[in-house]
Amino acid sequence: MLPHDASSWAIALYVSEWLIRLAMVVIVPFRRSPDAARGWLLLVLFAPWPALVLYWLIGRPTFPRWRRERVKRLPELLGATAAQIARLTRTEAAQLPARAARAATLVRNIGQMPVVEGNSVDLLPDYQGTIDRLVTDIDSARFHVHLLFYIFADDATGGRVMEALRRAAARGVACRVLIDALGSRPWIDKVRARLAADNVAVHAALPVSIFRRKSARADLRNHRKIAVIDGRVGYAGSQNIVDPSFRPGIVNKELMVRVRGPVVLELQSVFIADWFLETDEVLDGAHQELLPGPVLAGQVPAQVLPSGPDYPGAGIQNLIVAAIHTARERVVIATPYFVPSEPLLDALQTAVLRGVEIHLFVSRVTDQELVRLAQRSYYAQLMAAGVQIRLYRDGLLHAKNLSIDDDLAVIGSSNVDIRSFVLNSEVTLVFYDREVSARLRAEQDRYFAASDLLLPDEWDRRPFAVKIAENFGRLVSPLL
Image (cartoon, rainbow, N blue to C red; front, side, top):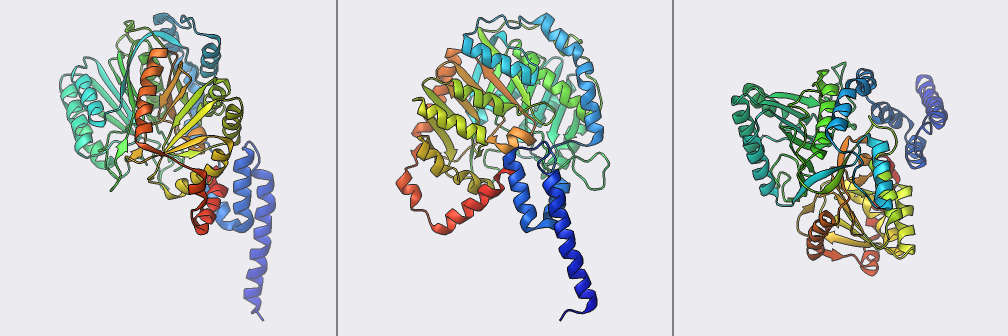
């Protein structure tokens, strides 16, 4: 028999757990997807107090009050930027086919960026070649260099970029750098000290600290990769500023895009917004050096889609789902992390039933165990639906891209998972051009050559314990 004090504590614990369960049944489903609500409620059922603590830390995809107040000011502060882009570019001038026009309208309504023509596009799959190109562009900068990266490391690759920034700042070029506080955590102190010493303005995006009033939630990250030089050259895609083998035993394979033309101004506006949110400093969008009159550099219609908790709706998920629903012949998806939502699963299954060929590239090796288990839990369902899953064997395929038939190419920083759909700030470039789509398909053909098709019989032979672990990963996948 329990002592009186112990009995009282046991009763108090029992009552508190049921109070938590009942309260969370009311709170959790509010403004949350059914999948996420089920995941949280399952955790609450089995572990009420740990679930309550976790929910308090990461349960709501919202930023601190100070940041939400700044977000409210963005439309007013960036109104001049948007007006300047409208004056300087031929927006909506491209005569897009009906399907592409609908996608462009969707992207504009989500991210507020119009489709603009007159762009040139270079696909950059070579890791060190991308860094070489970026360093060359920084060395040619006359007015400003803006970098926003999830990871900026104090290693050989980061050192090359920092040296280029030092040279640019010494020439009088205004250099501004944003790096995610958590993504760059192992290197951020050294990187900030070195850049600051070279007169480069550098700030940590979404700093995390239990002792700071302005601390952000650890799970809300700025995952973008953007470089803008003089408002005329822009970069976006999957590659960070870090050595390709910064994780022991894993070599990253990436895809970046270098663009020139009016679409660079849209990348610039994303940087201007993020810079303001982190520093409370307004970069005057009407300033000629920030938003110069663009030189029409090519014929490619393009559009920038910024997404994340600062933007309404599901962002990049809406584009991917809508694009798959409009596919006629072929869809190819490359992503390192694949944790789909129900709308995405439905879109894939429906596309196969319509006769569309679906290829999903994921890596055989991964760097996040829980995400790996969660995504593997969907393989059997996808293969049964007719999706062809191909396991990339030549390192970690960290590239994030999507091709639809022969006229739509999507390249950016967003993974195909719940985190990128809801929690991360991402940036995506959308191209409505057959020639760019052909070049992307050529890169994807290289993925085919370096991948193995996963067969249902082979997959069914995996150990039972592994299946159990995957099922657990799937249960918590809406929380990832």
